[in-house]
Image 1 (cartoon, rainbow, N blue to C red):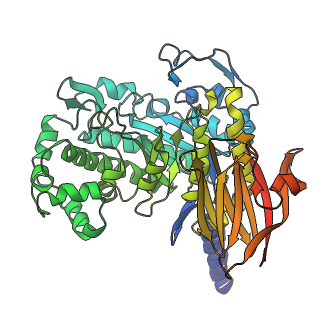
Image 2 (spheres, one colour):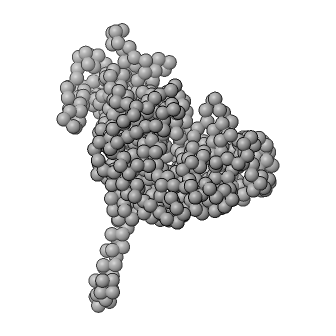
Image 3 (cartoon, rainbow, N blue to C red):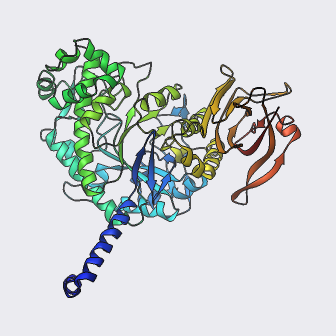
Length: 577
């Protein structure tokens, strides 16, 4: 067939050239449909099927993907053994004793999830060295595709949560060929060393094979839209690797590639890194201690360089097979374990973000797994240099985190959010997340359209300590305060997103707040509520409900969001003197 085609091209040169150009154009057009990140000015968006896409996601429990039955197409998902909760976390006595039956995909649809994060372990796809089995991968792609869901695979390769528990058995057993990390107290531990070249090559080979297979089975459908490389990497129990080869590298000169990056970006470095470098007078060469001083924070820099360069090689190999967006995630620092080793030393944390950017230019962005109450602070840190925000893990069993996720969507132009272990969600804890996702999904086109423009989109997160917030939106001052009705109904927190969709038109999505407006224009000019329409979810779709007035708008003085659940209201504002 190929020879006949080219034979006709030779016979009809002008038409042949036209066909070649047409085919080239088609290839370019088709290539544009592969999911990619589009950066412009102060926002980055994930483009899926040619349009911006907001991930209203959920991450499945780690071992759900260990079952073809659970990953296969289907409608039933039945937890047959109830798990226990201990201090807000899964109890160790039952966490690995859960038994499920059926398929998870309909449960995701019921939760209004549009994207599912799911683990693919190295052991799963390469149980014998050089022999690959992608049957579970095929099942999850087919299962998600049947429900019109998108997938973000999580590659559990060399490391997961600082350990190497998902690496294949053949690798674990050969500790001479694939050496382990060494720490002070325990000696060798079950963590593949970043200095193991054989492990690096094997991991990259497996990941490349996975991406090649995903391209083969999914290139036309684009169910898989992004990939996470490894999971929460870093060393626990010590600040750095103490093996012989690691000691030699630590006492050798800091790699020139890193020094070149630091010198080029000296004026914009993350403050923590800048402080360490400044302590030695900004030395341009020397060992790690000579350039950054001695201590656990220099150890953190050293390990961050090792992990970032290792993972960049794996990522680059995967992208050569199928160039999807790829990111990494971080186990964050917490106050009860504030030093490297208490949290995984070497992971993509804000304080070492510049190290990671220098060592891993092929990784598209870094993400925080946020399980701390200072949610907003972490979001601020991960976006401080203008990087996109995606939250691949957060609490699913704490209702305030639903509010945090909505705030992230409206305030940080986020690519998406995802509570972890969403398949474990108890029915009584599902309602807030389900309603929030349903409302955001309806307004997603407007949200995506206005990302990066604070005159057009704002988010608020208020509580009894900070009962109101006011900000400028184009030609108005907009104020959101805690809901209170004649002293009878009071709330202790409220949150939402405000969209300015016209000269004098706003859409408000949220809960438990009152939103009012004040003109910025003429002196003594005031604003009144004209027409306020509520939107309700009925018969499987959003539609206009009541036209609100009187008590429902406090006689025209504000838009009242519902105390229970989430509401959407559209308000026309008029001005008067």
